[in-house]
Image (tube, rainbow over all chains, first blue to last red; front, top):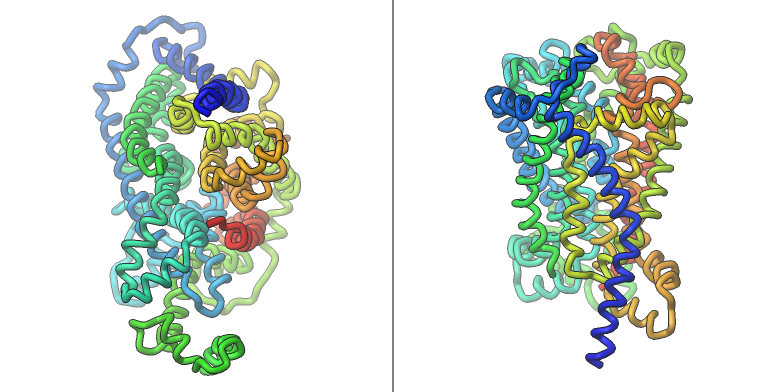
Amino acid sequence: MSKTRASGRTVGGLRSLSLQAPAVTLLLLWMLVPLGMTVWFSLQRYNLLMPGMESFAGLENYEYLFTDPALWRAMGNTLLLVGSVLVITVGGGVLLAVLFQQEFPGRGIARVLAISPFFVMPTVSALVWKNMMMHPSNGVLAWLAGVFGLPAVDWFSSLPLTSIIIIVAWQWLPFALLILLTAMQSLDEDQVEAARMDGAGPLAIFFYITLPHLKRAISVVIMIEMIFLLTVFAEIYVTTSGGPGLATTNLAFLIYIQALLDFDVGLASAGGVVAIILANIVAIFLVRLVARNLES
Amino acid sequence: MTTLKTKQALPAEGHLATAPASEVRARHTPLVPSAGARRVWLTLLGWGIALLIFFPILWMVLTGFKSEAEAIADPSLIFSPTLESYIAVQARADYFKFALNSVVVAFGSTLLALVIAIPSAYAMAFLPTRRTKGTLLWMLSTKMLPPVGVLVPIYLLFRDVGLLDTRTGLVIVYTLMNLPIVVWMLYTFFKDLPRDILEAGRMDGASTLQEVLYLLLPLTLPGIASTGLLSVILSWNEAFWSLNLTSSSAAPLTAYIASFSSPEGLFWAKLSAASTMAIAPILVFGWLTQKQMVRGLTFGAVK
């Protein structure tokens, strides 16, 4: 038995490799070629407004970048945005999944309505929130404030980052809900029933049965959301353009400003390299956390 | 409420003719004194939250049918619906051209990504090696490359091989963009499948291909469906690459809406009409598949 298993493992290993080859090769190409070019550009003096002036710059771009306070501000904004939205969507998603798992009339339609914002393209949702919801004089929120006799809030100038967080969280809360709700479907009802028979209250059932069951789904939600939240772009582009000042500039937007508004390919590429490194640092911490949940 | 309650109780009475319905219900909710009151609260809470979340979309759709004057007036549900914004918007840009591009690109890239990802996810879930987890995490880390950081190289490459402003170009970018997530999701769904089932198939002499086609795919169809759905939605809504790599002939709906966003920023009714048209297909698609997906998952859930 042990002999066949040992040989089976190597054969399995080869088979495993060959099956993974297409995806791995494509992603390698997709990553290495542009990454290599980005690293190369980051070492150049390369501005699209000054063609023919390209020359080797060494670490000049990096030096400029790291002494620019904008970089640190953008990093802070990126982390704040990712962190806040993750907390809101995962916390809210679990609670909503429990709510929408209960039986009530019209539950199917209510679920569909609650999941809907995830299907809306970021450009559209940002435009709708910016104009129809958060507009300081004609927006619905301003009108609501007026009804309650409160002063209207000029969302994008007084609470810029909070406004972006609200919009992004509105888009991703339904995603968390969708994934967690589907995970709830495989919750063992007999187990819940048995716990209930033994006198477990709703809170005990939530913490000892529902939450552990959702662990892997929560990991998936965190992983996927983090990837998208690190590179939030359209929402900022459409609403604040990174302002006022640098209040809503995240790393993705900072690089965009340098590359496409200042045409400084060299500096933008250096920013790209920094963003990739930061993303991987954040990833390592979270991935460790998530990987542990996937062991089981 | 009483009618609802009796409706609920009826089947129980049919089965357990002697057990009183109230006892059956009470066992389900021992801590809550009245099942009826709980139901009312649940209904109010569930619908209240659902409508709150959905409100911005509802408001956008309504605004699209208002006149420009009504659109910026105090919020009101009473207005005389008009199609004038839709007509004005369609006169400026042909919606259907953009919509077709979106459909082709979103579905094309999703199919391609699934075909490439399924063997890979199968190998990771059922033939794991020491490097599997590392590979998976590496794949996800490629996703963390901020697109803007690699825009310039990709743009230059696409220009040189003639892929700028083509659907093929966008399909390639979106396939690669979604591949890590598709592999990851398929992997988690495949892993949930008990290995005994596939091993039983192998005992009966099934080849890898047969195993995948006749056992794995049918059993994990709900998972594959939700993965595909996610990929379609992500491709449909992607705005960065589509805005930078297309100009006219391959431009999808994200480019369409962007062309309205700046000049029409002050014309909310027209903006709303264009927005509604841009999200309507994917919203309806999402609604339809979501229902099926949840049903499929309850049906296919393996213990």
